[in-house]
Length: 333
Image 1: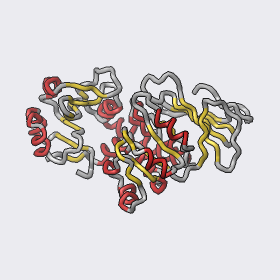
Image 2 (image 1 turned 45 degrees about the horizontal axis):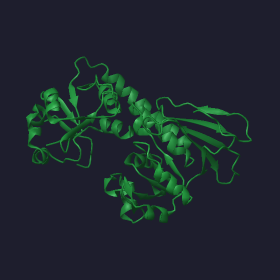
Image 3 (image 1 turned 30 degrees about the vertical axis):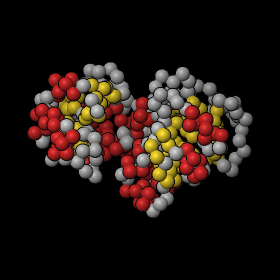
Image 4 (image 1 turned 60 degrees about the horizontal axis):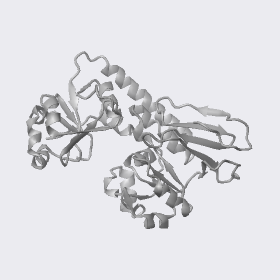
């Protein structure tokens, strides 16, 4: 059978689930909120206003994106055209990634969710309850969302992401007065960097202190586990991923998952790779390197070894497949 990972490892995986200032009438920034692990955003305070800078909205983005968060009871200060104004706190949101759902859940704000593409991908119990109650609209497939349905919902915010810089949806939503913000947590190369984006999400719902407390707990637990794992003298080897069509996708050596494996006391087979995205390899390439690997962690949505073998008989060529070292991080399976 496929084994389910222990709670500490699931916990770590789940939680892993800038430049110009706005021209306002306030003085210079009173406070700059430094992130400890996240590299992708920064926060500046100007009285009751907050400027958020997304430093790299998508891979190789030519410039940052800036948001000015203004409380609903305050007047909008003068600002330049490069800044997008967001009224806070928001009372409804459309999310586009399951990682966004995890952040909403951590912040006890699932009730704000009104729409999502491919709701069948959501596993969070509180979010599923909202879906089953008909409170979350199915918006189709992420890269081809039903924009008419989305616009009809009139959410106060859409949280999206961009893999290749296509922001056409952003422009279309602006025409209908629906603000959209970018969440680029997937570009972080450290699990705690991804987790720290909870602070970004919290800005829109006035839960900054709660987010800081949650992240501090996550950070302390992670670093404590890392310290324990660092005592391991003989590190077992690990690989990840499965075939999609003819290609095997697995984390690059600078990907956050590679960092997670290392911090957990494993030696990731592709640790010497320099990319922070995902590698696209042939089955033969993966087999040549991983035929005798100790552990195989992360096998997509497969529920059992027999299901894996039915989909691709060659999986059984890996020794770990027959030795009981295949793990999934989906506790529902």
